[in-house]
Each structure stands twice: as structure tokens, then as C-alpha cells.
Image (cartoon, rainbow, N blue to C red; front, side):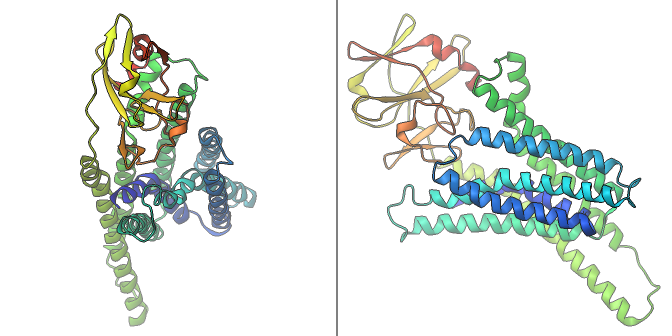
Length: 412
């Protein structure tokens, strides 16, 4: 239950914030383009989720790179046009181009995040045998709570920002877009490094490693920056207007101020709950899963020897290794079938060295709780363990220590 609240909030909150800001800043014909882009993104997300579920769309990483490139391009165009929006405010062609850029940005933002959120329910029965059990019910409840929390917070932010407007909010939104681009470029570089499309350089890894690990920090920065909107709304509503034409107009204005107050409170409450979700709830949820202890192994020269008799039971086996530069590494082994073994680091390109554990005969990523397909362990891609080469000799599995030393940066 808690896992899906965490996943929905962590995966979709930033997108909801950006969409709320865009929706409140756009006016007239511009908003029509934005809404068309958002609707197109939702429709494309359902299609992409279906393709991913049916394994028709095989390589998710490359597809995400294409979507992110579209998002970055449209974001840069949108930012450039925003800087000149006041000078061209009476130019209808400018407004059309501005709206198209915003619509394309909304389309790509939704298409990048929403398909995975839509696929979460497909995991509910990966472990449970039947839909008629409390586990399945709690997973659905957690998923719906996450959607409700993100949706209500985003809508409240939109209603709060709507009457504020102004150049300050435009500049704030540009800052949010640029911050989001940093995370997008980081993901692209991470995938290209993992796929060996660009050579591994220590300086490059040192640059992107903190950015990869700072995913939630960016979310907190987004929340802190957008708290400026409720503050401005409160400041504007605090002005006492006494020049009303009649009592009815005064009552209408007071009612509007009360509604704004409720929306501001909703934004603040939503942000507090989201922060607790990404901190306290994550800590509580992760403490329930402990990695199994490391098993003994023999190191002879530059080779690790593990008797096949110890790993032929089809269970997950974990081993520790101290690398040449002192990094404490872990790797896992599981027998997939009669002739093949799945061997890899206890880490992946997406979730890092959080590790895997076994539950009800399934291998599961500790961080994202994704169930691994045992037949794919030992191959690159997705949340699979980083593959580790091995050989079989004299009744032992043989792993070269140099292959582990090459990957020790992942555990530092």
C-alpha cells in the first residue's frame, strides 16, 4: 500500500506542479493549445502504457530519451518565447507559436511520466495469487491515495496561482522548467553511459552521480519555490478594498477571498503530506525489507570460486566483495533453469545499489518493488541487475575479480 503512494507522489508530483503553473499562466487561445497538448499526452500515455505492458515497446530507455529530447527542445523554445511575451503580446502569430510550444511541452511532460503511473496496477497481482485478498485491496487503496494527493495538490496550486499572474510567476515558472531540464539531461547521460554510447569518465560520473542521487531534493525545491504562489495570493487578498459599488459586490469579493484561502491551505497541506510521504513514509516502508546476509565464497588469486552445489537450489544468493579501491560491493546469483544462471551486481542502472531480495520465489528490487523476470537476470536493461560475467569450471562458478573492480564506482 505505502509503496504505491510513494511511487505515485515521487513520480508524478513535479509534472503536476509544472502543469498547474502552465495552466494558470496561459490565457485565451494559448490555453487551448495547452489543453490540446495535455489531452494528446494523456491519450498517448495510455497507448504507450499498453505497448509497454504487451512488450511491443521493448526498449523503454531509448523511448524515454526521445520523449525527453522533445521536452527539452519545446522547453527551450517556450522559455525563449516567454522572455519576449510582453513585447509581442499583441501579435496573434506569436501567441499561436507560444501556445504550440506550451502544448508540446505539456504533451512531452505527461507522456514521460504518466505511462509508468498507469502501469503500476499491473504489478498488483504479480505476487498475490488472487484479486480477492487484502494485499490486492491495500495496493489499490495506496495507488488511489497517491493519485488523489497529487491531483488535488496540483489543482489547488492552479486555483491559487490563477488570480496572481504577473511577471514574477512567469520568471518562477522559467526557473522550474530549467531545473526540470537538469534532471532530464541527467537521465539521458545516465542511460548513454550505461549503454556505453559515451565513454565512462570519472569526472562525468562525479558530476552526474550527485544529481542522480538528488532526485527527491529536486522535488523539495519545486515545492519550496512554488510556495511563493500561495504567499503572493495571500498578500494580494490581504489588501482591504472598501470601494465596492454595492453590498452584493462586496459579498462576492469576500466569498472569493474565502475560496482562495481554502485553496492556499489545500496547497500547503498537500505539500506537507507529500513531504512526509517522501521522507517518513519511505523510511518506514524500507525498514520492513532487509537484504539477506552474504554467503561465504573462496577467492583464489584473481578469481572468485563458488561451488555449484551451493547455488543450484533456484534461490537468490548474495555475496560480498571488497574491491581494489576499498568499495564494499555485493553481487547476486540465482539459477534460472537447468543450464543457465543469472549473475549480476546487487545494483542496477536505474535504482543504484539498493539491492534485490527474494519474496515468494520472486526476485524484487528493494527500491521500486518491481518483480524481476528471472529469465532476464544477467542481461542489460530496465531494473535488471547489472550483468556480471562468469564461467563454469570444475564444479565451480568462476568470477573474475577484475570484472567487479571495474564496477566498484556503483557502490561508492
